[in-house]
Amino acid sequence: MNEIEPFHIDIPQPDLDDLRERLRRTRWARQLPGGWDRGVPVAYLRELAEYWAEGFDWRKQEAELNGFPQYTTDVDGQRIHFAHVRSPEPGALPLIMTHSWPNSFAEFRHVIGPLTDPRGHGLDPSVAFHVVAPSLPGFGFSPFPEPPGERPWSIERVARTWAELMRRLGYERYGAQGNDAGALVTPQLAVLDSEHVAGSAITAGLGIPTGRPGELDGASEEDLALLADMTGRMAGGSGYGPYLAGRPQTLAYGWADSPVAQLAYLVERFKEFDGWGSEAEPIDRDLVLTNATLYWLTGTGGSSSWTYYDGAAGLPIDQRVVPSGVTHGGPPVLRRIAERENDIVYWGEAHSPSHMVAMAAPDSLVEGIRAFFRLVR
Image (cartoon, rainbow, N blue to C red; front, side, top):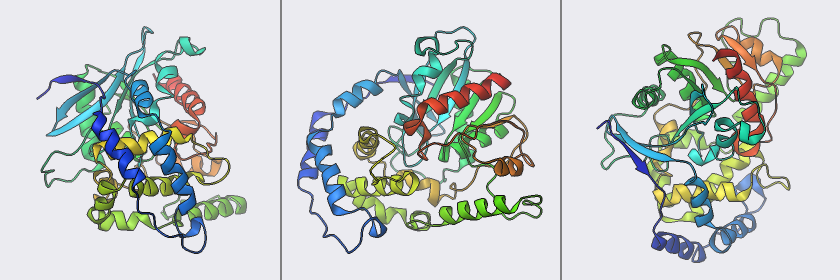
């Protein structure tokens, strides 16, 4: 069961034809009063769905994704799909990158090239990586088995799976990086496999106040106002989290039967996270539709919700066993809070126009990853 098998994306044409036919036959809801505050507007979603059916070129996206060597292996009864792109540079550091929710390994399509082949992208070749980008269990080409089993997927279980994957690939020392759900997996992996993990790099999440005694000692009025605004925005939104934590199976029927239902849900998350629906959307819609198509074709919209149902959603753990870097950490007050429980050696204050940093601001993410691992490799 330790075998690693080559994998190539090759979606049968009837599946694509079925997707387009379902999109064309959508039974559209009536528009409720108001705009985005009631959910995704009908006119907006209808235009996007029409482009998905008539203009979006899946075969082009499929070919680009197949430009990355991909594999599958079985770990703990779960098939794990992953891209594995080796660098031509001698001394490159292996780096396992964990994608966000609701996303897929396609999130990294614009950062893998500069990280693995910096010379070819006009960057200093002395910092290069062999990139391993798995699909989280229950996401995309890592679907749950049938039946799925009763043991839940926790962040710790994913981290142990990643450690085993890196062992199978023969990597004795490696870095770890992640965003959103990946930012939870990454420091957990550092704790569980500290003997082999060189450093833990996440985009953000450390330093968020949790109410611990003394946490805000020394904070200025300006800092407190900034934190109050931040926590207020984090608490707002549609309230999707509690429902996913309680009854994800109910939502899964709509996602499995209607591509528009799946699309509406994904677009709403991008709206809450990134300001989608505004005139200046931070992520190209072909990237968003590539992600939506992966979810639809693999039927993993429902199973991806384990990050909420199994209690895995939240903030990254604090840890001091390996150095930490935060590429898009935000204002200094967050770093001061984070440094109390973490060995922070790099803190990038760069702001991204999007929560999905790798998709919206790939250059800044590449810069931050390279800067951090230059310090700890």
